[in-house]
Image (cartoon, rainbow, N blue to C red):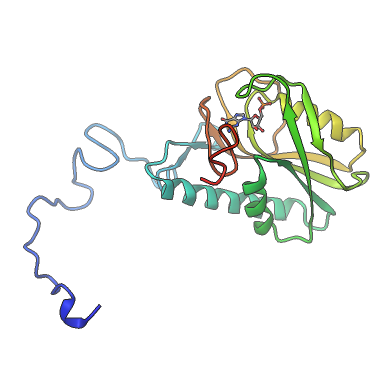
Length: 221
Ligand code: 5GP
């Protein structure tokens, strides 16, 4: 931009309708009567914490909010996993296709010399509901015996897919087997699962993007 094209500083008339920060009413995210969350309860509009201090996803106001929240949370999980698995032979197992995005990001936030492997599964039955009958389309290349395995999943809905996978992988005698799920739906009937690392709890709605599809589309959102 040429210097003579720049708008002159402070040339605009002062905005009469602006009130000092904190005194604005009925504008922005928190309207009349709505309490602004305390510091630490909510950041960038995309998550807050439930009663147990776990993060709960809020409908983001924009894809930028969602992307920021995802990146921050995945970084936190990476740091936690780094601390928990220090000195251990860690193998990250990505459950394709949905977990490819979180796997790519999470693995780079884990500061350990880890291994990566992939397995692809499909569940029989209706397209948007898991039936619990899982078919392994691509199996792992690695031998799991004696290894510390962390299963990376995109989303836990009924939990049936993971229940099947855990049973299958436990039979391969890993030293440990834990789950990291980016999203976990709440308020639905699900099988009891011990998910060691959860990114966000979300309401029981169908979600797409960041690896999750609708009829194989929108994984790239
Ligand atoms: P579950 O067996 O826990 O009911 O379902 C797990 C699998 O179903 C996930 O790995 C994912 O592939 C798919 N799934 C469950 N909920 C959703 C959702 O909201 N959106 C998308 N795109 N896939 C989902």
